[in-house]
Image 1 (cartoon, one colour):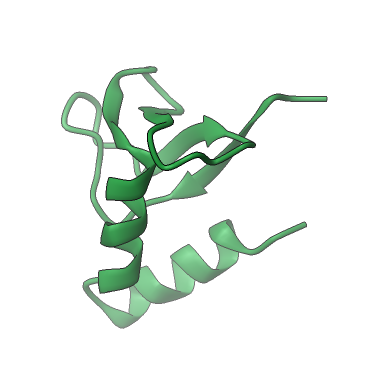
Image 2 (tube, rainbow, N blue to C red; image 1 turned 60 degrees about the vertical axis):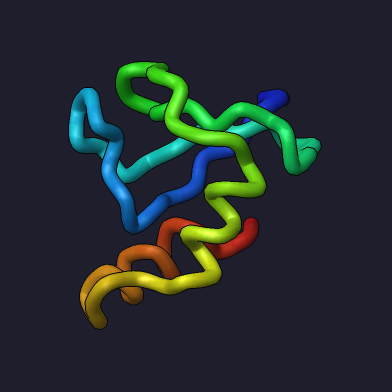
Length: 72
């Protein structure tokens, strides 16, 4: 069982351009969010939640995020 889970942000990783991010399953506001591809620190989880609440930039982004971020 993994101790982390992946989710998609509308904002890409500044290092590699990936939108897939990884955070601890606990999801505390101060948990660090890392790029799932290159493992670079991107932001804190509460900052990622703010970005997700603002919503995607387009309809196609919204569809992608809905598919990737849906729960198991």
